[in-house]
Image (cartoon, rainbow, N blue to C red; front, side, top):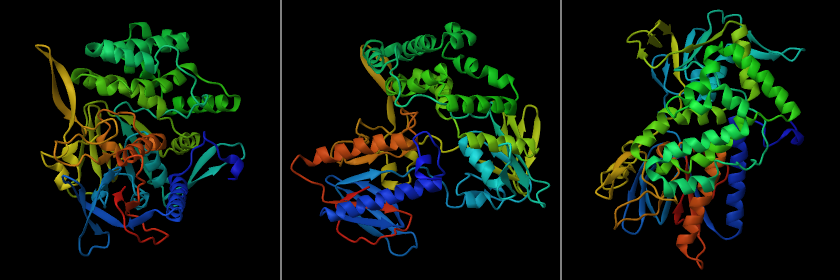
Length: 490
């Protein structure tokens, strides 16, 4: 790949992105030191606890290699812990709680492998295991095929999810986004102020009006005029669920490739893609009942639309299926997964029968977490961080609230804390934000959160104060040794 092949519409392996961002990080560190800032990078350190004091925030840490614990205090701390996986994801013989690190699942032998999850994480798991038992080859016609190793005769993969659907291929659309006509942020903000008690239903009407405006033929085809919040996802997925998943994937891939080559935009897909960011503005303002309805019925439409996958990922699934190595199964809502007490792997029981796998990978990704799930003992205490509050209704004119999950944060991502302790902790750890910010994901969200937090820290220091230090705690060894005092941690 040369410089001309790099573009904002392309997908790149995680390893490549990691190397790129690591290079960017160390370039910024060098620039900061050259500008006179004190920067200390604590590589391979594990944070054991975070304690909010009256004037500062105390961190307890330990080097990855062990040894004596250390402690330090800071004015500002940014908690960007990311996803939380156990060090050894093989939590019982042949049962993996995560597809990461890929090296762990590459140890799986040529056996029947079950993969829970059909999103990109599930696809990554499938490809990682498959490439340890064969290789993907591009034929002269352009078709991708899977060539198994001679000893991989018994190797089989089964992907499974409630609906048994594969994600669609990445679709072409104009970037930057064309403004929406009806479901605009201004319209959403008006509803937040004027219709707080029926906010979700009013937002849904904007969604329908925008979709009809963008693609009336699609809207008529799914019966959008008669859709409710409770059945809109069923209408959205109906055609795919009635088709064979691999037949649908092949057709969708062909369409996506044609549209990309000819710069053709599918109007309804593009409309839903643009609306998810606007409707996200309303989610923190839903009352408890509407928040539950949104997560259960409506959110999945947006997640499916924006979570499309690279074309090559779909090609690899099709290649494995043609070689009779891969199937997709719909589990429905009533299923049970049990780990084998003696044998390796897991057994999956559904209404239609039982499936046994010698190896099993949970590739459903990180689920939403709450304050009680924090890995830091001091923050788990009742008087520290709290779950987000959600309005339940009015009682004699007074609003009532209840704690419904996640972490209660302000607009600058600072957890709301009781008076008398520091409020200069910033939480940008995605699993703790999903409850009220369901579409936070990817590099763009990280950029937006980082910008807001940095601005908040600089504002709190005052116009005449320049931050003099930064310390970064990481589990990855650094290529550069920089030792200097610090007064801020990220």
